[in-house]
Length: 240
Image 1 (tube, one colour):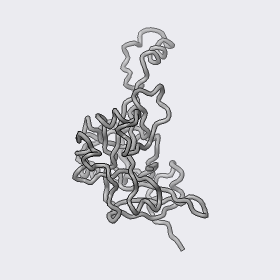
Image 2 (cartoon, rainbow, N blue to C red):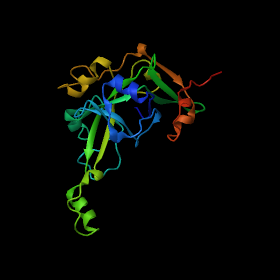
Image 3 (cartoon, rainbow, N blue to C red):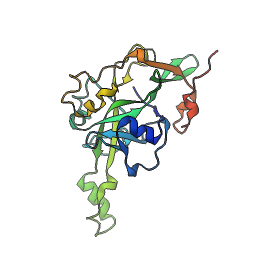
Image 4 (cartoon, rainbow, N blue to C red):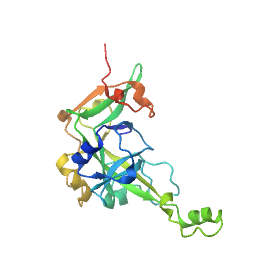
């Protein structure tokens, strides 16, 4: 799976690498050393591919009863079949920029986190899906009635929730030593193809990234706490 990741580019370098401009609504754009589920993070969606937006990590299907329990990963093998992801796979794809992700390995001393990155730490895009969830009319109207009349024409965009998930696939030989799944990393020259392809699976976009172009190394267990988010998390753990 992919449950934490890093994105350490500064804004100018990010925009240059991904060919998209950070939307003004994003606010201050800062490097992330421990991006976690439930946080709003930069993505590039298929409906606005020249703009970087902030969506919450943890996909909530548009038909869900409520906005709880977002799914952080979707299996590439069945993403076109599962009701939670099928519609988004067809028409709401996104790029999730990153430059590494974390995995945990069970050891005698507990779970040891590892950072997985490309061999030269260059940034990459993970394949993602996004959704927009809005409360149904009855829920919205009930909330308005509680405050009396006169609010029915208010813009309800602030009640909408936009979320994303990261696709995972079978691991390559490197990641297989750490976990039985890995994030789908797109080849740079095929990133935009993921946003527009008729059938990404058939076109080979969701295959494991080559192991010989990646590296993995142990890092501090400080990464276990999502509130820790600083450059020290990237430093290799000294081993005896």
